[in-house]
Image (cartoon, rainbow over all chains, first blue to last red; front, side, top):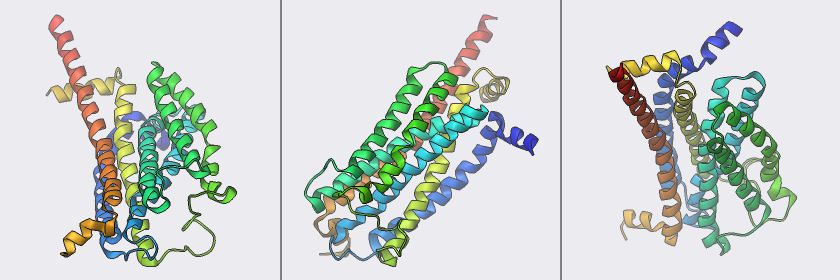
Length: 247
Length: 57
């Protein structure tokens, strides 16, 4: 089994294999996006309190979920690289950071665009918003560390440690709306009793979340491919690739 | 008001809703385009280096 793992876990095989996966993941993502946007922007009825303004939910909530999910992937991949020295895991962690930062940024900005008409303010320093902002800084710190350290293996190790320390922030973000009195509303979907949202509004939201998941899977592979090339730029197989490209 | 107009109007929330969607769109597209471009540059730079090396031989 380990032989199998080492063969397909090697950077070269990952590079070849990912090329096959990216178009499929991307295609599924596009179909889901079209379905989710139609459902969310056209088919779902306006909210009884927020009118059409609630439709921001379909980019805000999936972005926020992804910002947490990608962080956990990044920390797990970082730990895997740290403990078992798996090069592909390091590449995945490094490729995840800009995507996680993008989704965190989107969660914050779309939240702000939603807060202004509904709460009357772009920003408040409540627990949910502040902890999400800290998440953005964790991602940016990780990325800065990667560019500041020239040796890529040292950078991966330092980044993994930063990412693992930052994991404490994740439950804080998730439970912030329960632990503190926040202006941000409590959970609508991820709670134990039935979600307090009508099915016609919920289904597009779940489809959008799935679309963002596939987007992340496709783009993280795309980015990891580049990271692997950069890691292995002096290896024989990358030289071969270049020979092929020269034609 | 036609249905398209009322759709774009978003019940008065047009600015907030469409900026949120527009910005998300831009960020998601950039995250695909930029790495692809960087990969292309990577190959171009290495091919150039290789050609220089083989010329000097």
